[in-house]
Image (cartoon, rainbow, N blue to C red; front, side, top):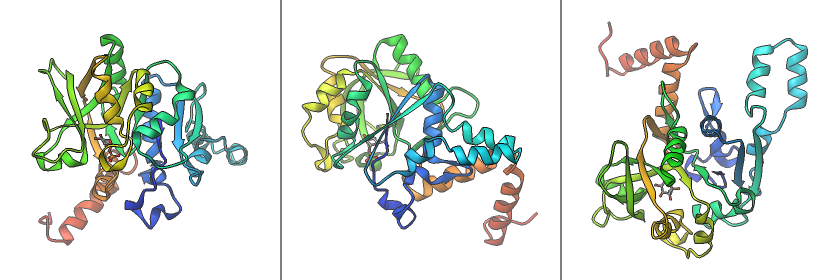
Length: 292
Ligand code: G1P
């Protein structure tokens, strides 16, 4: 499940017409990275919770008949494969509208009728997680959830002065990369935070969360918070905090989006060399780096 109903005001004016999930990181829109990660983890039904103004995400995952025909006739096989691979065969996309922007918890609840009574994943596309040489974060979490029979939430250490931007967990001692969550609170002030272990945008959740969300009243920021429903879940079922292998880029911020762009460009098959040269030149020009 992908919550994509946000207005993306931080990226105005670009997001006046382009949803932030469609902003590109090198050659793919942000949403494609999260979708690829979900598919790799074994998801075959993708539920997008969107709003009534944002058709670009649905259009993007729709089949592009005319474009495909043109590419086929022109013998542009490579591009044809790229366009077709946006959604591989056997994977379906379902779009649900969130009528009012009442919070992340409410967005998840909007997917209830489609997801039904089985464990599911929530991916926040703003958090781009890159594990270059191994399994994606969600695959790591899905394996752990299956093996432990528990919900699993991705976490990462953050500086204490940043706790008010995240859900923060309290846990029992970690065994390897995971620890049982004993408490979770949405965006606590640094002095009130139970730890500095922050929730990042990947969750594998028990379907029991839906009933708990139905009973969840508005919390931090006046919104229905997923964090509050998870807090209620802890009284009934185990949930694990998981320190994933990989690097997280916070693409909900300008600098995070720029960082991801630079790192992916430097790793790109065709762009790596020119990107490296361009960055070296720019830093030399600015006097940040001595010329060779
Ligand atoms: C949401 C969640 C928060 C989590 C964060 C991760 O907050 O409510 O618990 O730590 O995503 O990116 P948002 O960033 O949407 O305000």
